[in-house]
Image (cartoon, rainbow, N blue to C red; front, top):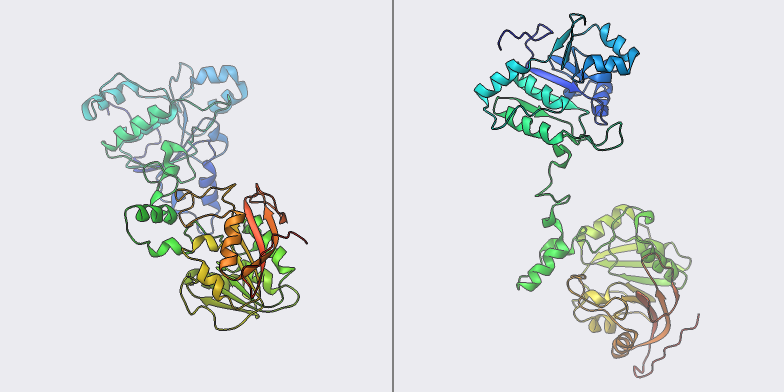
Length: 433
């Protein structure tokens, strides 16, 4: 090393470098863990730079800015460096500074680089961390743990430059046997993006609804997870606070109408069944969904003594064992290839259902891969009539936050209340309260 001696007198193999960016808190937090974080123990030396001298216990201080220039701008800070009790490495020690201040060994390091790494350019250094990374490899450090070198902002209010220079030298120093690590909280080298797939924040292969659409297009059957709890189609939250408001409003509105025994068809995770079960006058709720995973979630988070949860495919025969008084089918009909048989077989006298309004939300398998169609009010009248129902009240919701209101043609969601009738040719479009 051309007569260079590391100022601490040691030969460290593992070094922790603590800078002043936000991820320094990962280091500080590790020191407060019950039995200390592994990131904070086992280092042979701790290095810091600039004002870190007054914050972190350390063995070596880096002040790569011109040290006399720093003293001229900030005399008290300069005096603290003059009296510092640890070695300092700087870009220029200047005549007259105490012996604990050492000039960065530019010539020795460049000669070493030319012999061992042979970088194909001039001496490209313009960032303190770049100097430190190369120096660490130069003196034989094998592992450098970097905290607080985040490059997110600077005291000037802009993103600090020099990051590409640091990234270059980290890569080059790997060839010299140096391993550089940083905590997940750090923005150093974009290291907080670890685990991403080709730049995606979330693995794009884990969107079952999209995969279902793809499999439809190429003629493959849907995979099991396309109807699973996390398919992207279901509302999933352990309390009503986490459920999309318009879904909750629908059930709360229905809860003011239903009595006796109620079927909640396509109940999902069961939050709506719980709303219905809590309503005055409701004695029993049959909550039915084809996803066993969703039913298990319902039993865990939305159980009531009056709810019986059932795993069943509503598109298949043999769905109902007991007669009831009401059925609620919110956002279900559009999921069925042929909802007619289900509606005919319902063992109840009163029905409330909702569907997406084709006029306002035109059906597309690209945007609604779990749906088979959307409905206009006319479509819904025809479906109900064919199934032996008479529409008596129409309501709507305008958006994902919307309360249940009087029917509007431009609504996002159509809601209809219907009654079983003996003469299916009799229909009405009444919208009374």
